[in-house]
Image (cartoon, rainbow over the protein chains, first blue to last red):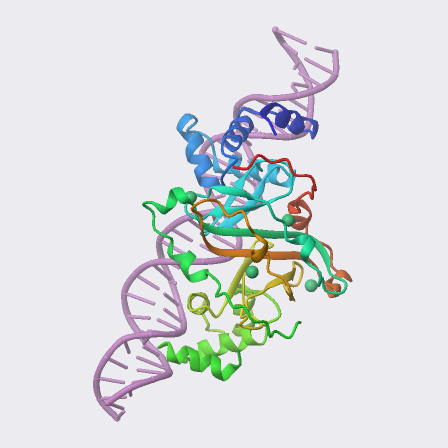
Length: 161
Length: 161
DNA sequence: AATTTAATCGTAATGATTATCATTTAAGAC
DNA sequence: GTCTTAAATGATAATCATTACGATTAAATT
Ligand SMILES: [Mn+2]
Ligand SMILES: [Mn+2]
Ligand SMILES: [Zn+2]
Ligand SMILES: [Zn+2]
């Protein structure tokens, strides 16, 4: 979604186009290929506008999220946000070092068959975490990634419940 | 994994079998069909042992997680833990109301083909969130679930990046 | 039983997020 | 362009989950 239609859409929903809001959206729009933290956003904008408050950033992020403009993901111990690179439903490869995302050509939902009796599906989450080519050189894999990597086992003997 | 082999395994890794540790593991083993929060765990155990500290619970949860005994997931604004219902790699349907999980007979990884050049895969996350049959009667769907449900779109026009 | 040191407790600190409320300002009416 | 009003903001404090610290307790080993 481009800048102008983004603002139009916000206005149609009754939100005001404030200076802060536009700055926040502009920065998000300049970073649609990666997840950023609220802290990153604040630190970036405070360079130009030292009085920008945390509260304003959080309020705007949540407004945008609740209106469906923002995706949220949590990894490496922090909640991260981004405006989707495109409105189409899709999933990502996520670099846990830089937060950069790569669009994936696969959604697992059509292949899922064993939905439990009476279970109402609301949403799903599919992300593949790793280290991107750029981050391979130089940076180390963070500790948390090693320890939380699930052990991959192939045989299946679980009594469903 | 049963209680005794669990304790054996901890001992082999050099951990002591303290009273607190056993109580924590026992409660987790009694709840392998759902995710619980640290708070739930503490509140349950403090009924019998009022001096149990947060620090002990968090330390134990992280020890268990780092040794690969515990799964972690975050939804509805809280981090949750559980001992896997079975050692086999698998994914879940998760009820966002009660935290109860249902084993899924599908892992999307084999179908993923477009891993970006140079990207090292470390882990993946696939969860289907919803409301279980039991929770359908009586409870409401939490606000956050409505607002964060991604819009499902079927056509694909995203310029990969 | 004595020794060793991991584990625990109580408490304080941290870090992210949320709440309050006085003040500012965008948007629409005149 | 000025006026009106309610949304948005900023400064500050509060809350919540999680982590850190140092003194004490208690598993495990001898
Ligand atoms: Mn999907
Ligand atoms: Mn899998
Ligand atoms: Zn990267
Ligand atoms: Zn449920």
